[in-house]
Image 1 (cartoon, rainbow, N blue to C red):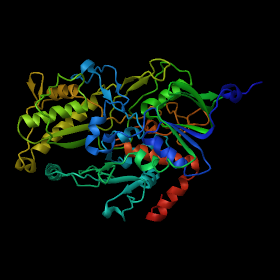
Image 2 (cartoon, rainbow, N blue to C red):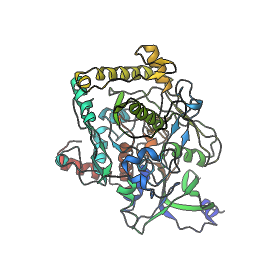
Image 3 (spheres, rainbow, N blue to C red):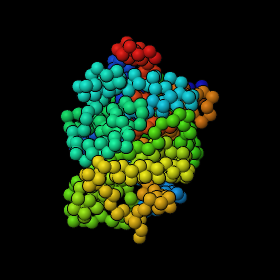
Amino acid sequence: MESCFERWFSDNLSRPYDYIVIGGGTAGCVVASRLTEDPEVTVLLLEAGGWDDKSEIHIPAEASSLRQTNIDWKYLTISQSHACKAKLGERDEWSSGKVIGGCSSIDNMYYARGHEADFNSWASLGADGWSWEEVLPFFIHSEGNVREDFKKSPSHNNNGHLRVSDNAVTTNIGKTFVKAARELGYQQRDLTSAMDIGVGIPQATTSNGKRCSTATAYLKIALERPNLAVITNALVQKVVICNNQAIGVHVTVDKKERDVRVLREVILSAGTIESPKGILSSNGIEGTALLRTGVDPLCEWPDIQLNFIPMFFHLGNDEPTLTRYKSLSYDNMMDYSKWEALRMKKEGVTFLLILLHPKSKGELTLQKQDPEAPPNIDPRYLEHDQDVAILKKGMREVKRLLDTNTMRKSKIELCDVRLPGEPLAFSDENLDAYIRHFTSTANSPVGTCKMGAINDRSAVVDPQLRVRGIHGLRVIDASIMPHLPSANSSAPTIMIAEKGVAYITNEHDDIIQRYKQSTGASL
């Protein structure tokens, strides 16, 4: 009788690979680079987008110009019942990098790990081996921080692949913000490794004034290795499963369908939206809900992140209005804020409140059995009243900040921001309306392939990131997070990639042991 391998690969002319990595994004570049450090291992990296040769990718100031372009998946949510009231169709735009480097090639480069309680919560939820003490060595393993005063810090590393540096441009107004926050009692902290609530100027994944994506940090150094093959503009149709074993992938390249056999494992690193699509499509599942974001935390940690952004750009004479845009995206709101500052002939700042741990739970479903069709994304923003209550608290904290002596001396005051026909007042009713109108994503969705214990029926992967019920298939990207850390998802995703590869190569315990020896830590 013909075997599964003979039947499926009978017409395949491609060579087999030990590992096939689907997605050359933030995690995929790390995975491919680390696996090919072993010259005896062959790896095929498949990326749906193209190479990161667009010059704007590497210029930090151009980050916002990259969204909603041909290197962005340009996802769109379904209409929201409780939010996005100022947006066309009450829908939100979700950006995700469709290019080598993925989101690390188009994001704002903010480097933050999250709070230790975030990862301890992961472990408490059944992700054994993912407590703060067990993930910290992998954050440090990846980091190449250029700050001289961090060289002897047990929380930092100067020699990792990912370059991390202070912002090249600092402003007096940013220093004023820090001073005002300290007046309110906030402690100034190292935001890359802070364990407590605090204030500071964040570092970024930049090097010598240029973006340091995972493509730059990891993949570029691996491209000369003969055991790595990279194919761009490759759309994976499905992972091929035979007798509960991943045996290869079916992929379209240049409009031609190809079959590629895998000898060891297929690794999904396609991101929070595309990785679950890969699992569902591979199992022939259509229209089945997979995404359930938002997990009740077991520990106490910050709920709000407050970003303070100076605005001093020339926009020309084209006046933006909130109703002129087809959708009120983050960038459009930034344009509006910049124009308001110019209209008043003053420098301005914008406060961005980010809800770090929403209670509202979203859902992702496939529209149809077509890898090119976008999924139905329903984040269900602000469905839980506690989310609105926390954001109201954050807005009132902004007002308290503006009322400090530091801000008053600097003549920084709240401008007359209006809802349709009404000035902003700080009553519950007005704040509720404002929050539900001006809602936008921070572009860090997680949890679609949740990691958890073997007996957790809601978990897609086990703590070593192996897909339950399918041999030879792992997920290594942001989709495995049980919930979002108190940060954006970039640095935690790189940590996940480092740790995931270490499980595959059996180097996991060695990396932790080296960290212990270098710091005298007791893990």
